[in-house]
Image 1: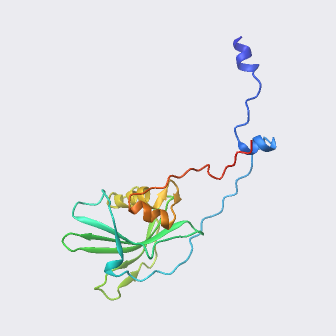
Image 2: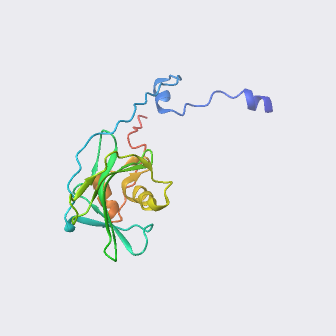
Image 3: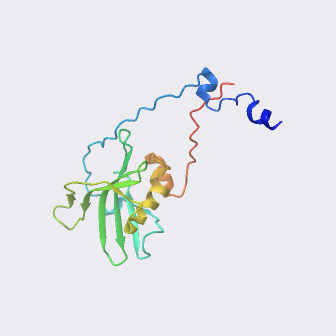
Length: 183
């Protein structure tokens, strides 16, 4: 009886939808493209009234974070979320950075720094480098930004979804939405 159980069972039903429809059981080749960053211009530093507050628990209690929604973009070519981020302390300290964030690799890059009272107002980083935001203690707020605002897993949200996330509204993501049941 045990031998029948181990060896006498017919093959299990296909679990892959493609296999089920076509009857083909061959593995398919996955072609991975090398990621290439899209070039872009750095937008000007936003005015004081343009910032939208982002509630981040990982920032110290005396600091607040803000995003500029008018310069926020999600590239369809390299899937990078780009944004102006402002972190301001209650004492008046001010740091504004124009950054990019890759959900798929959990990395960020700072393209420029901005301060309205300095000349030039926006200073570009000469050689921006991608860094892992999960390993740096001081960038815990980037982990929170990625997890709660910018990303759904390894996929960046669209600007409309990011605006909703800032207001505390989240759109659920079903990775099987594109599958059709042909039965």
